[in-house]
Length: 112
Image (cartoon, rainbow, N blue to C red; front, side, top):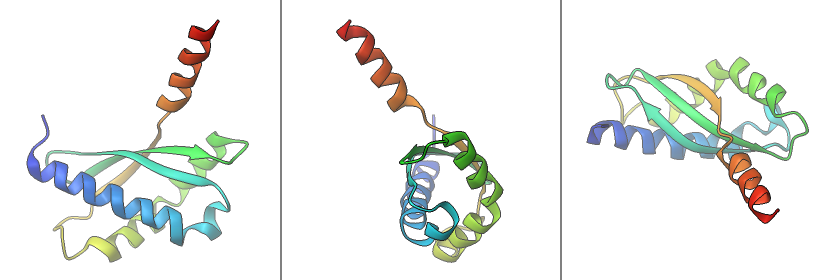
């Protein structure tokens, strides 16, 4: 069970990362649509697991590797936005959220 502080920090990071991916990283990732679907923060608020959905790209694995390679720059941009609201800027770990693909596959199987 997450604490209220964890939930607040998770929502803050999700909102800010969404805006960063939408506005500030066009040069890094091109026209890819990157949606932050969920953020889970550790109890000590030092690590954030960020789940992203990737659209409008032929190779999602390569894009996820590119996001992971640019984690330091993304964390710096996040730090500029939330440094007055949190004491520690968490280390970011990115994972692909494939729940939408899974749901579409289940729906397709049910139609058969």
